[in-house]
Image (tube, rainbow, N blue to C red; front, side):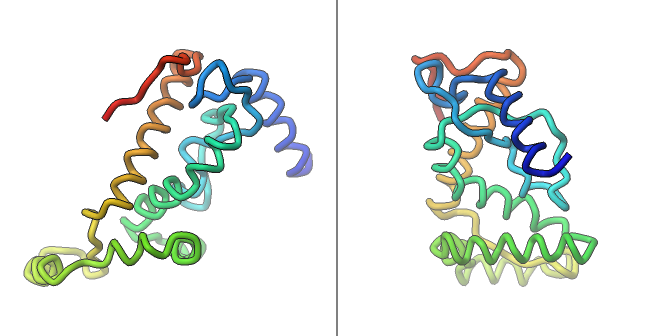
Length: 170
C-alpha cells in the first residue's frame, strides 16, 4: 500500500474513532489527525502506532512550535548514535532556527550558567553542552505541550474527548 493511501486509511480510522477535536471537546469537529507525542520526538521517527487522535486544524497546527521545542529537547541527550539520528537532530535545530529563532536565542546560557558548567565539566560526558531552560518561551512551550499530551493520554485511556467544560490547570 502506498504512503498516501496508508495515511488516508489512518485518517479515516482516527476520525471515525474520535470525530471531535480531543482538545476543544465535543463542540468542535475533528478534521485532522494529530500524532501525540509527535513522531519527531523519536529516533528515526520510529514511533509506535496507536496514539493518533482527531483534532481540529487550530489545535493540530497551532501547537507546532510547542511540539518542535519538546521534540528538540527530547532528542539532544543522549547523543544520537547513528548518522541518520545525528542528521535528524541537526534538522530539528535547523527547523527551530528557521521557524522560531527567538527560542534558540533564549536558550543561550548566561555567564553564570557557563561558569557552573565549566566547573562541573570533569564530571560530565565529554560531549556535554549547556543550554538554558529558564526562559519564558521554552517554559510556555513545554506547559502547552504537556497539557496537550495529558489530554491525549486521557482520551487514549478513557476513550473520551475533553468535556466542553473541561480544563487543564497548571
